[in-house]
Image (tube, rainbow, N blue to C red; front, side):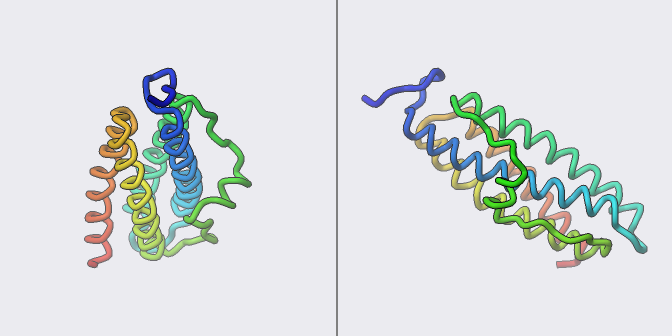
Length: 158
């Protein structure tokens, strides 16, 4: 039997899970900052609607960033906190100032797609090692974000 960490999970597989969560943390952090920019800079006919939706979204992302970092700690590892590393490792890239709300929503949809792909990989591995804490977290995120994808897509009439 392999070594177990403090919460009774396989140490080697928990390390892999921690690496995947660290990648997810990077992507969430860049996405969060992009959405802050959309909130600050959006203009046009849908300003009031999108300004509020973007604020709602970045507040939600902020909470998830903290939950992901704390899950990494729970698994026995240290979450990265350096923005420079996030920018190197994230597949979600920084966006330039975006004041077109429709373009911002389209970029948000692309970012959700990136997150959903990563979260499903984490969901599978966490199920494999019976990590109910991480599995539950990812399942909740996926369910919530799939609905948001539907809603943002409906906004764009896609």
